[in-house]
Image (cartoon, rainbow, N blue to C red; front, side):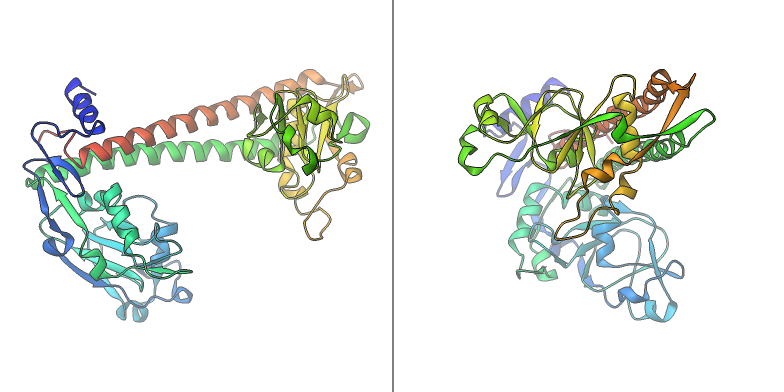
Length: 430
C-alpha cells in the first residue's frame, strides 16, 4: 500500500475528508463519482416465483431457489446453477439472464435479509419465489453486487426488515438503497475484475484445504488398519484413566480467576488438537476447595458426554469440567500423539455408541475396553513406529493449520481491498 493511500485512510479514520473526495450521508467517495442515485434510478426490479423444493432435482432446466443463495452461493457471484427442475415447473417461474442481481426476500434475522449475488453465467436460468431480481444497463452488475456488502448497504437493508421469526424485505425497500460508482463503466469493470481475482484466490485456497482434510481423513483410516506383526491392545491395560472429579460448585465461583487453565467440553470440541488456554482460569485455592483434579501437561482430554468421543491434548497443566476423563499412557505403551489420532479416527463411530438419555454419554468401562491396533516388535509394543505414524499425521495437520491461517489473511486483505476500491480510496488504472 503506497503512502498516498495510507494517508487517505488515516484522514478518514480521523474524521477528515481527503482532498479530491466528498462526504455523503452514507460515506466518503471520490468527488467525480455518482453518489446522488438509488437502485430504483439505475434499473428495474422483478420477483421470482414458483420452484417448490419438492420439484428440485439433479438434472433438467437450471434454476435457483432463495435457499440456494444462503447455502450454495456464498460468493458474490455464480456462473452455474446447482439445482434443476422439469420444463413445466420452469415455465411457471421467472427466467433470468447474465448480469441479474438476486436478493433474498426472507431471512431469519434482519441482518440476513437481502443477501445479494450476481448471476454471471451465459445460459438462461429460472428464479424461484422469495427472490427479488434487479437488472441494470447503467452500472456493471458485478460492481453493484460487491457494493451490497459495504457497511452502509448492509445496515440499510437490515433497517427495512419486517417480521420476527421470519424477516421480510421487499422490492420497494431495495429501491431506496444508495449507490455510488465511477462514471466510467471501464473503471467499474476493472474494480469488479480485481475483486473477482481475489475471490478466485480464496476459492483455490479453500479447495486446497478441503483436499488436505480429505487426505487426513483417508490416512486416519488407513494408518490404523492392522498390519503384519500388529496386535490389538486394550486401552484400559495400557493407560491411566484420570476422572475429572467434578466441576467446582457455585459457592467457589469467585475462584475462577487465577493461573490454572479450566477446560470445558466446549473447549475440547472447538480447540482442534491442542489446548493451551481457556477463557476461564481457576486459582489454586479454588482447586483445593473443589472436587476437581489437576491434569498434567500431555494428558489426552476425552469428552464423555455432549460432544462424546472428541479429544484434545493438554499443552499445559489444567483442570476440567466433569464428564471429561484424562488419558495418560503408561510407560512404553502408547505415544500420546498416536493414541490421540486413533481416538480421532473412531470418533464418528463412538459418537453413536453412547448411552442414550437426556444427553448421550459414554461410560468409563466402554472407554477402557477400546481395542487399539498397535505396531509390535519382538513381542513388545513398538513406540518408535507409533511415533513415525504420528509424524506423518502431524505434518498434514501442520499443513492444514498453516494454510487455514493463510486463508484468513487473504480474506482479511480482500475485505479491506473491497472497502477501499468501492469508495475510490484505492484507484485503478483503465
